[in-house]
Image (cartoon, rainbow, N blue to C red):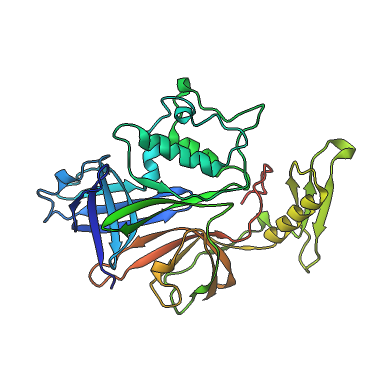
Amino acid sequence: MPDYRYIVADAATGEILHWSLPLTEVEFGPEKSGPGSFHGTLSPSFGHGLSGMLDAGNVVILVERNAQLVWGGLVWRTEPEGTKLPIEASGFTSYLHRRLDLHGNLGGRGPYIEADPCQVIRDVWAYAQAQPDGDLEVVVDDTKSKATIGTAKDPYTTHKWEARNLGEIVDEMAEADDGLEWSETVAWREHRAERRITLGAPRLGRRREDLTFTTGANLIGTPHVVEDADAYAQWVVGLGAGEGKKRKVVIDGVRNGRLRLESRLETSEKDETKLKQRTRRERLARQILPTLTELEIVDHPAAPIEALRVGDDVRIRLHEPHTAYDGWNRIVGWTIRPGDGETPERVTLKLERTVKPEESGDKGEEQ
């Protein structure tokens, strides 16, 4: 069984306050473009003298698995329940949701004209950590994207009198078309826990041919696969820029022996070649009928827990009483429940389709 250790550190200085906090009922994990979460309970037999150390909003919990850091975040809440002390924490980006732009334009780093949203995120962290008592020593990588924020006519601006929430600015950057995704990582660097934001442009992860999840090997529980034809279509009408008769229209479809179903893709695409490409991608995405959003797994050589990365595409093969499934899914997060006594370690993967339809304003075509 893996060896877990829960370490408490001062949020601002990084000083280790306790190397092995006795916690039970632990669940934690990362997520795509989000801080992830942590829940645990301080054992009542060890709680005396330790609960005061868990200063909400001022300390960090680090999770170590087999001497490797796998999660870190800020403690935000402790609430006694009888002799137990439940603890709630979130990743470091949750800190930005408790900070505001008090100077406007991130202290003069903006306004932004055709700026890379990756750079805006770096500027948000730089601004937040430049203020007195605000340095979490979070490092943001130097990834660049092809997306742009703001124009000469309409610069991306944050005004002092708006006191914009810094976390919301980061969320806006992650929503830019063909922009970026991000995740959090922690790792030991010369006896200090490095806190890092990993950016992916336009997305995190890659196809992992080296990882597989298969019934009878590393899957447990009962996988929940849904076949919902509300979003299914073999024919897609792609609508581009223009109005009336001048509007670009592309139709992509295939006969496959099933009842014909159609869908509409609304875009502002001016280039007909690009519109054809998007319409074809949409049709291929809508021809995938089964949906799998969660999967219970255990540590296994076919897919070691330490090899999991947010954003990766992995192959899943299911052979269940009512389910036969073989396809690629994207890992968008996971929750780990460390083993306790005879209870083994369990991991719940959070999944989405590798290829999925574009978001649509049409009700009934949503995923």
